[in-house]
Image 1 (cartoon, rainbow, N blue to C red):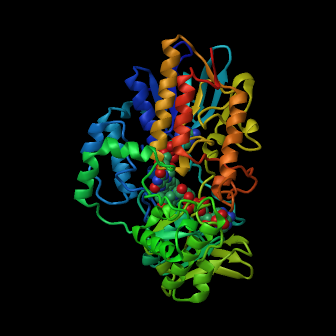
Image 2: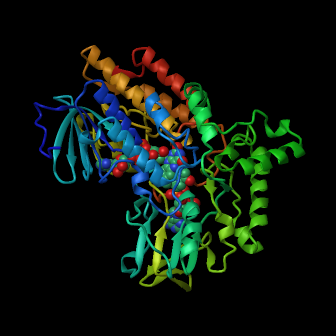
Image 3: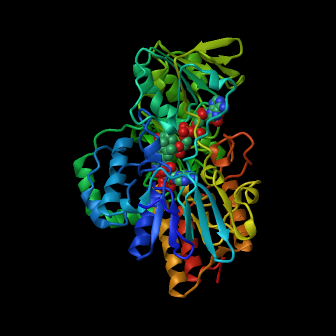
Length: 535
Ligand code: FAD
Ligand code: N01
């Protein structure tokens, strides 16, 4: 692929930023439409999340047969998943297979980080500049930059002086890390920490886990995928996918239709036990009202705390590991032997809820008077979610308006797809879309299809510009907030609210309700892109 600038007189039809599952499918759709498109990707390979997050134990929490593309029935049939929940390596293999199967690799430019994207009112085109200074021009720009791709790496004082090794789970070395014989500190107890801690503990000589807030985690019960189950799903894939699209979070969690109040105490207890055995995120479906009704949530949450107390030998450690917040207001974690790990003598839980990490010293982590001496630190501190990746690009729309300024008090979009003042710019799973509250493969495909159809619609009619109206955007932002406000999802300091990044405005970013969302998108398209201005 030529690194030369594309002359303004020879622009591309579209530039896609990012080669995760969103960028891969977007490129495929655009090429299918006969358009000249290129993907720019900061990494040296495809896969996005699964390229970067190679920490021990990284795997999907959506069953493999659901976390996969549905756009190609042939692909759907020929790919054989090996485990119930696919590990990172298997998902990477799948991403690479898709890219080669559909001949996409020559159109992806790797090791290319986009630094700026500016809209030119005169030509009606986007000009992109890479960190290396390459300039490209295109009619449309699609940000497929990911909801969880911008690492949140808190600037702990003294960090640069640390003499050991420093890792972030979302930037894990490709060659792997050997912790044998090492004293290790893990900062954070979110999903990434919960997946990696048991495996790091199995290697390390001593492990210190620095916990600010405990998390709800349910055993995943991963294992080989039953070939019979795989055959059965494949035999009815279209029907199964249609069923998934009808679900609130676009995946099959066997949602209980009864509310807590509609069940007897015994029935509810039995359902909690059944869900515990089903494992992982099936727990979201324990009662129909778990995310709406505090009482229902309290009952299910206290069941999880009981399980933690049963598993963890030391009562004080069990108590520290027991979350008190709303179950599900942060994404529930799925683990393999997480709580059990704290029964190992060389694993120590350090409570930093009342007193944060003061500093990183050359040989460890200081909290108050005590320095925990370690050879390696794993920052499992998550992501500047949903807005981080786009915010890190200098995006300027019509009249030179900066997206960072427009979003200073929180992101504002119409459908999480577009934002007023930024014509011909689309986002895949942007803030205001169901995205992270769904099986993201479903959300990604739905978004890409919407964007591709919109571009096709414009071209058929010789139109050159599409832009969300301020009115539609304001209405949508109000609706997203209203839906979130009717749930318990605002009940803790989650990354859904941006609360994990100091200084980030507290705004609930995703939209709850995949089917209602799809219906809205279809309605918008059927009315000639109502809520967008076309010219
Ligand atoms: P990404 O995969 O994040 O890809 C975005 C790409 O854009 C990256 O490759 C990045 O390098 C590139 N990029 C960003 N900025 C720039 C720039 N300025 N210039 C050039 N390139 C850029 N979702 C689920 O539904 N189920 C799961 O079980 C699940 N597990 C997850 C586990 C982990 C550890 C994480 C972090 C996320 C998980 N997710 C899960 C969410 C996951 O992010 C999505 O499922 C999906 O992979 C997102 O695909 P994407 O293409 O939208 O974004
Ligand atoms: O990140 P997180 P993650 N000092 O933000 C702590 C997906 N995912 O990478 O809770 C000390 O959840 C922070 O503490 P607190 C999934 O959607 C899925 O684990 O803010 N601690 C928290 O404990 C997930 O939700 C899987 O008080 C600090 C942790 O770091 C999302 O990605 C696996 C701190 C960060 O947890 C993000 O998960 C992995 C500080 N300054 C990821 N700053 C699956 O299982 C932050 N923390 C599929």
